[in-house]
Structure formats: structure tokens, C-alpha cells
Figure 1 (cartoon, helix red, strand yellow):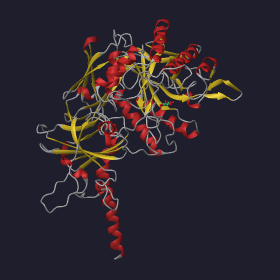
Figure 2 (spheres, rainbow, N blue to C red):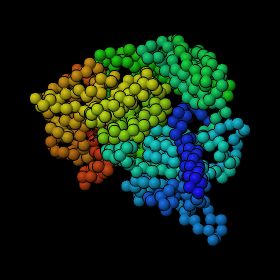
Figure 3 (tube, protein in one colour):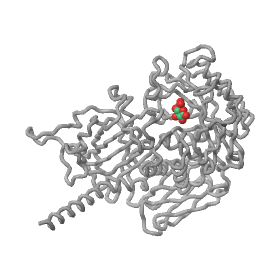
Figure 4 (spheres, rainbow, N blue to C red):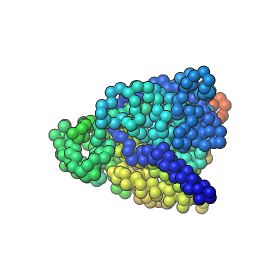
Length: 620
Ligand code: GCB
């Protein structure tokens, strides 16, 4: 009897692991399988109206013993992902997507529904669709631009996988579960903050929840082009280098790379679904902010052809200089959060991206810092077209749990997904690992792992992180930049708020800087808050005059810093932050924008613009 019990137990454990494996494996495997150049693929948007259920107790996920339904062999019809409807009048069913409210996706829930403004927790989304025409052998994927923070995705009652990280894309294959009609896709979204998440519990921005970027169905042939890289080789403006990866393929699959305008046609043959190449670039025109030249690139196999507009430029450093196509440049930048302040909520559309980048251009920028997480792909594609250099960042922000293996795993995954998605964008010159993280051995280890990891994914960009300065104990007028992680970075960037969080604006030009690296240096943030329309003396907090004066004084300091190769002041426009609570002034907004949440420019906008106009002529 004892033996029988033991065998039963063993069987249950095995069965449980098998079920867990079946449910979870696709999710774990997904980030290697990210489809890139999605705008160039055959796809169908699932944007529009989705039904949703707000579920703060996760009633649709756990039974009353708090056991997850999706880890049971035959999930109960009480599980919301079963999208069950009562078969007759006797059956008890306590949810109904079709009778629940709806919201428009992509979009966050906080800005769309007043009662969800502060909500952090689980919301279930459901959308039904038909897909009658999937030809034999073809494959179908569901692609999410981003879901904040944790997404569990189910089709027709079966789990496709799980994704964590609120600002990067992921996809799951649907093919075997698909029906011609009446499919139901259910997504459980949870934006609850937690310590080991990236970002962690504490941030200075709104934790917008939801399916915040586009959702689409992408159809592929049986053997398809998963991903490719095509950029100028590191430090070599005459060679195009990269690789093509098929989803899986026998050896010997032929791939063709074409750039018609350059008369370039190159044949590759895959080994294990993968091929690398180096091709003479010929008479190529380099991409730059002044001349953002993009070429039509075609990548094809006998099954499919993908097209994409790609620019080519080199980026490197020499001592304190940043060299774009071999020429020293000064980065006239601005930091940007991904928010449409006027409409309210997370920015998601190309039109949103155009508003922000047009403002940056008006400000005289040649560069933007996309803070504090990877932005929507629209931003990068537009930056490529408009000629803006880009700093892209992952949300390793402030007090991420550097001791946690789960946090490191998540940060690595977000970095992988960001670089995988954006590595062909000429605009991106910097991958940033972190923002204002407190130095310690654990932090250094964590960031080193990320630095090593990013080098395995892309060697052509410069690596940086927004660090902090500290005061010289013996001489308070001296500020030191010596964060040990700077040794591993190509560019040392630091944030400073002299005149706002400490001291007065007029202290700034008196500061002596002791920067202990022979590398290019960027001031990745400075600034102060002003309520647009509030006027007063230049020493009166919150007035436009205070902010203007702070910019004037900081820019005097900036001009006396010979190692500095650029700035990205904080920030283009006011943005929502639950930490900013001063009534009548902040009311839930961080007011450091140069433009208000109504789209009105503050005085400091023009101060910075005048400085950038001057820099553009001095440092063309
Ligand atoms: C910082 C942070 C940024 C904040 C900003 C502020 O140093 O990097 O996320 O929003 O300061 O306004 O205090």
C-alpha cells in the first residue's frame, strides 16, 4: 500500500511537471524566436475593441485553494481563459467576457478608464477572430509590441506562453490551435509592481498597465526568415556585415540580400538555418542627421521576401570624442518619456512619435535619449527617417534588486528583445544599461553581466549608462565622476540637478568637474520644474523664470566642460508621475518638461534652442 502511494505520488509529480512543461515551455523559449521587421511582414492588426474584466483577486486564474487553473490538466471552466458560456440555465458561470465592458487596444487602461487611473493588478482581455484562409503548411503567430508588465496568453483555452517586461515585443505561435472561425484570444495582464521586477517598485513615472502597443497576427511560410542584421562593420565604413537567421532549416537554404540602389546582390547559403556575411559596401552614402539616407534592403528566400529601409553609418570613440562616420560630433539632445501628455496616457501610435520627434527637431536636436525603457518601434523608425541619433535604454532604474537572479534574467531578456528588434536602426548609436543605480559590488556585477551580454548581441553600438556624480569631501565645489562601471562603458554619462535638488542655479558655473575617464562624457540629465504659465522672479520655485535661469546657468557650466560631448536635459514634456503630489503645481505631473502637458512651450525651451543653434554652428 505504501509502495502504491509512493508510485501515485511519483506519477502525480511527473504528470504535474509534464503539464507544467507543456504549458510553460513555449513562453520560456519565445525571446529567441522574436520576429523582427514586423512592418515588412504579412500581418493583420488585432487592434480595436477588446472585452476586458478587472480581476483584482485573480479569481479567473486561481481556484479557492489558490492553485492556478492553468497548471491543472483539465482547467476548470471557471478559468477566465476558457471563455466559457453557460450551456444551459442550470449551469453556474460567474464571468462573461461578451457582457463585460470593452476598451480600445493598443492603449493603457489607466488613461482610458477613469476608475482604473490608479489600478495596479490583473485585467483580462478577450478578442474573438476568424482566420479562415490559412493555407496548408503556413504558420500563424500572435505578436505583441508590448504588454505591461506580465502577460499570459491563451488561445481557445490553451496557454501559449508567458512574457515579463513591459516595453519589449514577443510572439507566440498559434498554428496548431487555430480554427477557421471563432477563435478566442485571452490575455491576462498584470502590472503589479514587485521588488524583483525591472523596473522595480520605485520609479518616477506612471505604471501604465495594459496591452500598450500593437497586437497583430503574422503569417509566415513553413520556413521563414526569423531575423537578420545588416549594418556597417565595426570601424569599417567599406564593409556591410551581418547575418540572416531562419526559424529552422536544413543546411543549404539559399538566401539573397539585395540593395537595388547600390546594385548590390549577394547570395548566401545557410548552415543550420543561419548564415553570416561581409559584403563590400561600394559607393554608399552614409546616414547622418544632416542626411538621413535610407536604402531599400531586400532579404529573400525561395519562400518569402522581406523589405525594409535601412541606413548605414559608423559610430566609434577616440579619447573624449564621439565619431559619426569618422567625424567628431556633439549630441544636442533631449530626454523623452513615452507619453502623449495632451491626450493622456502611454504614447502608442506613429502620430504620437511624430509629435515628440518634431518637437525635438524644433528644439534644434540631433539626438534624443529615449528614457527609461525601450520605446515603441515607431520612434526608432521615425528617428531613422528624420535624422535623429538615439540613446535606447532598458529600465534598470534606481534600486533594482541587484542581488536577484530573477531581476538579472529579466534585464537580460529585455536587453535581448530591444537589441533584437532595433539593431538595424541607423539612428541608434547607444545602448544604455541603467539609470542612476547606486554603486556596489552587486550592482557592478549585475551591470557587467548586461554589458557582456549586449556585446554578444551587437558590437557596433556604443555602450553607456546614466551614472551619478558625487561631491569631493575635501572641496565641496568639486564634483567627481568616478563610478567604477565607467571603465566598462564606451561613453560615461551622468545626471546632475545642481540648482534644483541642491544648491542654487548660480552655483552651477562655479562647479569644478573632476572626471576620471579619458572617454566621451554626456550629461544625460539636468533640469528643474516649472508650471507653464506661472511667472515670477528667477529665484521663485515652479516659475518659468526659475527654470529658464537654471538652464542659463547650467549651460554656462556646460560650455566650460571640455570633455562633454553632448546633453539630454530632463525632459521634453511634462509627464505623469504618482510621486509628484504638490497641489496646484504638480497634481500628479513631473513638471520638468520644456513643454507643458497642453503642448505649450515654456521659456526654457527657447533658452536651450538658442544654445543648440549656437552649438550647431560651432560644432557642425
Ligand atoms: C532623475 C531620474 C528621472 C526623474 C528625474 C526627476 O534623476 O533619472 O527619472 O524623473 O530625475 O525629475 O527628478
